[in-house]
Image 1 (cartoon, rainbow, N blue to C red):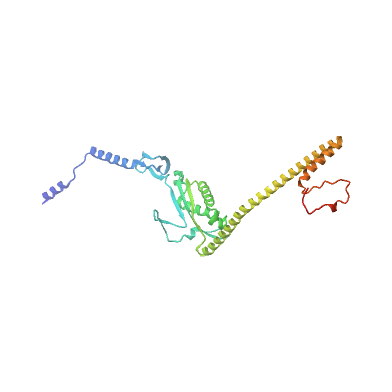
Image 2: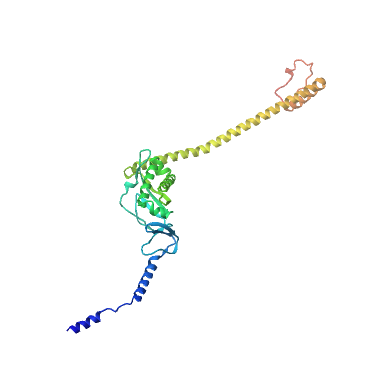
Length: 325
C-alpha cells in the first residue's frame, strides 16, 4: 500500500525548471509588461500629459510614444481639440433631428433679476476647449463645477446691469459677448487652461406667470413702432415735397428779382443814353421820341381823327357811334 501511494505522489510531482528557463520566462513577462504599459498612442485630437511619480514631466503630441512602465510614469490623455458644452436653465437629453429636452425645471439656474427690478428667465450654453492641458489638470480640482459657477456668476452680474427690455429683446447678442469676455477673464485669472469657444443665449423670456402681461406690453410697443414708422413714412413723403416747392419758389423769386433789377438797370442806362443825346440834339431827339411813341400807340387805336388845330367845337361834328378813320 505504501508503494502505491509513493508511486502516485511521484507521478504528481511537477517537473523542475532550470534557472535559465525561469530567467527566460521573467524576461518574456517583463517585455510583455513593457510593451503593454510602456508604449502608448495619442489620438489626433488629444495630447498626452506625463507624470513621473506624480510630478509633471512632459506633454506629448499625437502619435506613438514610450513611457517608463511599472507605474513610474503616469499618462493622462486630454482632448484639446474637442469642444465641450455646458447648459444652463435646461438639459438636452438627445441631440439630432428630433432634439429632446428634459422636462425638469432648472429655474434655480435661469431665473435672474434685471437692472430695472424685473425678472427674466435666461437659458444659455457655454462651449469651451482646453487650451493648456497642464493647467487644466493641475490648477483647479473640479474644473467643470468651476466653469458652471463662474458662468452663472458672470451672467447674473451682466443681466443685473441691464434692463428687462435689453435682456429679452434689444441687446441679446451684445449681452452674450459681454458674458463671454467676462467669463474668459475669470478663467484666465484662475489659470484654468480653458478657452471659451462660444456663449449663446438660447431662450430669454419672462417667467410663466407674467408672460401674458409681457405679451400685452410687447403688442403695445409694436403698435407704437408701427404708428411711428407710418408717421415717418408720411413725413418723408410730405416734407421733401414741401421743401422742393419752397426751394423752387425761392429760386423763381430770386430769378424774377434778378430779371427786374437787370431790366431796371437796362432802362436806366438807356434813359441816360437818351438824355445825353437829348442834351446835344433836343429837337431831333424830341421828334424821334415822338415818332417812336406814335409807332407804338397808333396801331392799338381803333379810330384815328386828323383835325385842324384851329378847329373849334369839333365834338358835335363827330359821329362817334360809327367806325372809320
